[in-house]
Amino acid sequence: MDHFLYHNGALYAEDVPVAEIAAQVGTPFYCYSTATLLRHYRLFDEALAGMNHVVCYAMKAASNQAILKTLAEAGAGMDVVSGGEYARAIAAGVPGDRIVFSGVGKTRDEMRAALEGGIRQFNLESEPEMEVLNEVALSLGVQAPVTVRVNPDVDAKTHAKIATGKSENKFGIPIARAREVYARAAQLPGLRVVGIDVHIGSQLTDLEPFRLAYRKVAELTRALREDGHDIHRLDLGGGLGIPYTRSNEAPPLPIEYGAMIREELGDLGCEIEIEPGRLIAGNAGIMVSKVVYVKSGEGRDFLILDGAMNDLVRPAMYEAHHDIIPIIEPEAAAEQRPYDIVGPVCETGDTFAKQRMMPPVAAGDLVAFRSAGAYGAVMSSEYNTRPLIPEVLVKGDQFAVIRSRPTFDEIINRDTIPSWL
Ligand code: LLP
Image (cartoon, rainbow, N blue to C red; front, side):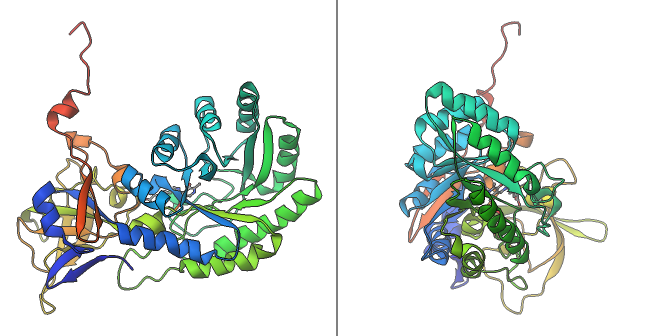
């Protein structure tokens, strides 16, 4: 459920007409709903009720400071994967002991910053990384809390570019080698083992792969405890999928996910951490764009928008589907026609949808891409020197620009001309 609905024939973001935002900020832009963000965060929080738990929002999905602050004030922790994300979490007021640091390539500088600023734990992904973190922690005279991310060799049954839990993926250490790796961790005086981490992929629409992975983690917990390790925390990663089409998708709900976690891991007495990103932010955001031209081609018609692949790259990168709806509600009886919906960027990959059935649309009309809140703005670029598009946050009947559109001069002035020119 989200808060982008038609009222009296017009699309609203909560209590604000989307057209009113467009009139003020121009198109294209991203628009997020506070109520949807909070609702999704709370669904996870409630799903884990009764177990000692922390929901660490995977901010890679949408990391505007206003979004982070909204979630942090509701009690969310954060999952970060870079020094930049760590700095964002701290700037949004998240206490260090609610920040987990994931990622396969953490540098010494990133480790140092997190150890100095406070960190709940590092999720280690390799033995070389483990040795380096030990050195960095010792150089600061502290002990780093760690889990090791295990790769359970489970097929997440999702898009190949976002599956992470198979043995051929770059993530984690093979679960079969975990005891050996934990034994080494226990010898390193700069590290303090606190638990186990696993994350098998993103946009999972079935609980079974999670269940298989978590069962392996339960087995490993018992084995590592027998080996004398103090395993009291399980980080179960993110990955629960969302419906991208309104009609025919019904991925498992957070409450069902929580029940499965309780079933598989509830008797271990561990603190549970989860790292959802997409489910919190995905359906809490839309991208609004204007039709610039309707062009008739050879046997097909094109809707050429002012938004492009640089603003929302998911269709070009993952063949992802986003529902695209007019912001004026079409008549129920309106005849639908197929269009190729494209952006103005100079490559064929800049195609959002092919032969998508749409009600009648004309140049100047506004459309909204649904489910664009996660991995939308954060993956955008200024390709074709198209300025990063603004982000707007709605709360009830209020809205605010939370990132403004840079001017051309601002973009140009970021470059510097060397002295010889
Ligand atoms: N934890 C770790 C260690 C991750 O790598 C990820 C996502 C998450 C949590 C959050 O997963 P989520 O709950 O959002 O599924 N750009 C792609 C998705 C990349 C996901 C990367 N890792 C897309 O647009 O589909």
